[in-house]
Image (cartoon, rainbow, N blue to C red; front, top):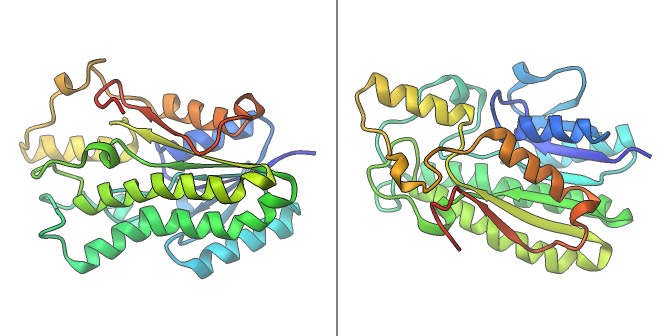
Length: 259
């Protein structure tokens, strides 16, 4: 029987989620894409318009998935970002300036935590009853920002993002403890700088506005990561090749930070 995998945020072009969805499809899974960006929906996936920051929308998506496939085996929480996750955010330029914990608005705080931390919590909790029936895997996407924070002045990112991604790491360990007895593995991948669609947008915006870019000298490998590199690791964590791994956080950042 085919395994059924849900990947949030996978409709966004050049995103980690899109890479993961393709990888799981290649592994023979039935893949469900949960996203607000309906323009990115394609026929090879079962696509459900979902606002992952809204628990009712998440529960509806999980219910539709169960009705369609009668099971859920894999959940990858790939949605997220240092600003909003709506279709409008996808097409708009990144916000100017750095929003730290001392100067972000309360709306910034709630939006960014909703997109990154609340969303993963809602999805994990809603999918858990189905995963517990036969075991399975959850992979959450965090960030190197959770390890070292984000320096003031960094364009296209924010302090609340670093906090939210740190919460994702802690939540991963807690879900692993609670779901282990049911054969559900829960792991986390923390990428460094990755050449995703959002990264490319920030770089393009910085060049247009003559904003200095971060130095590659801060990354010992001398380059940013690729979507494909991160996606391959996430897919591996969903397979039996990693059947004894749970509660782990794997850093993939070119040695820009060593835990």
